[in-house]
Length: 117
Image 1 (tube, one colour):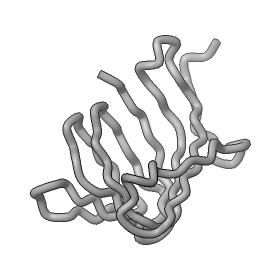
Image 2 (cartoon, one colour):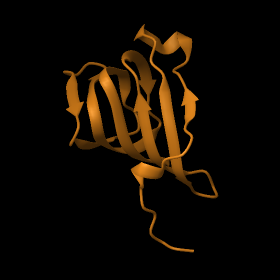
Image 3 (tube, one colour):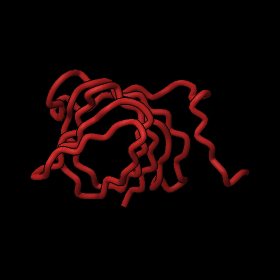
């Protein structure tokens, strides 16, 4: 077993297709594709690639998430804060307790590492 996990975007394979829960959708009809590369045996950490088509939905983070946007444009609307636009080349962490709206303006793809608490 290697302790190095490459994110090979050219051999992603078949994604899991999902969508936000209907009661969370604010606008549009966003569809998500997820290629999960790693899940720890205890289920407390996930890593992979996520993509969403345009639309907006409410989010409520109870986990830590590192994101690196590789394609597209999204706007993060944290409740009570100014919106933040993220685009290809941007990396950031979403902390537990973040509540607001994730709005995909142009189809967005990100690399992610999620740590449940």
